[in-house]
Image 1 (cartoon, one colour):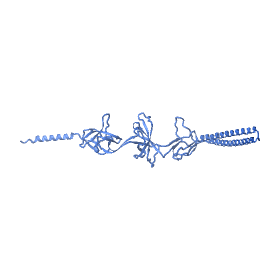
Image 2 (tube, rainbow, N blue to C red):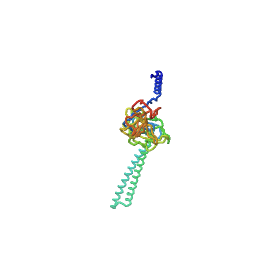
Image 3 (tube, helix red, strand yellow):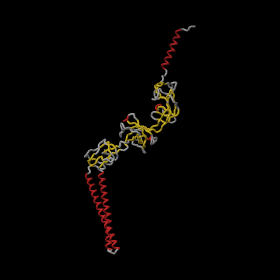
Image 4 (cartoon, rainbow, N blue to C red):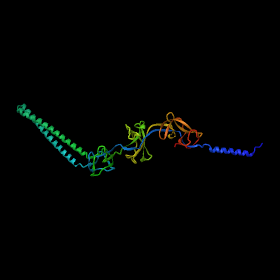
Length: 388
């Protein structure tokens, strides 16, 4: 029996329409960014919480020990000076005159002491002659007694004159010290960063608790270090001698290897919400073209631990666990379906995290796990492959 063509055609059209509707309405695979699980090096690092600063190993903000008028200004900004070189001097003619007077008095005191001691020597020789004459019964006891008394008095006069000469010499030292207070010299070799003052201007020492600009700012530009604040939470992981990487805004993406030379033994708490520990890093091979300058801003990454030839994934791919929940990732399987996977992690930094269990090399983990529709069981297609 032949079936009517009309109903079969209608049935076929209905089935085709239903199939087309299902195809159009089926869930579309979501696009996800993925990265392969790789073997390689993973470092645990600690970084500064705020910009660090390049500092000179020695820097002196100098000012005269007393106030006065600048009579000599021997240096200008940018000059290189040697240790002990005169930088400036205040008007000190009165102190120069006092020093000369003290020196002349010291000379006179020395001369008086020599004369008194010569007289004492003569009196002692006379006493000795009188004693010999007494032994021969050629003089009286009274003459011997007078000679011995004169010798003792002469020796006392000599000692007194010598003491007075030492006092006069000490007065010279006092005058020299007073004069030195008007002269500013370089405590070490370096370069003049700043000069505050001109000839004939008056400078005054800073009153207690009120800082004033230094007369001369001297920097030793042969040695620099980086001072950077580290969060107190991370400070316990840092050790003296740890390797560090330093980047400076002035040098773009260029990085310099360094080493931790000092960890402050106390916590800075000026900012109540971010207590920090100051760490000092020395660059192993500082740049010389252009050179470092004191005051440059710097960022420091301190390497606290290293895992070599270990499995790792981008840190952004990991959903952190909490309490009894383990860390997890979304894995894009060969069938195109996403699956949640619990993992165990080790060392980590901002870029990569070590995976000690739960993944194998070559598997693909999802980087955009927070996207719409990106969840376990969903069909997905890789937007791009490789590290992001």
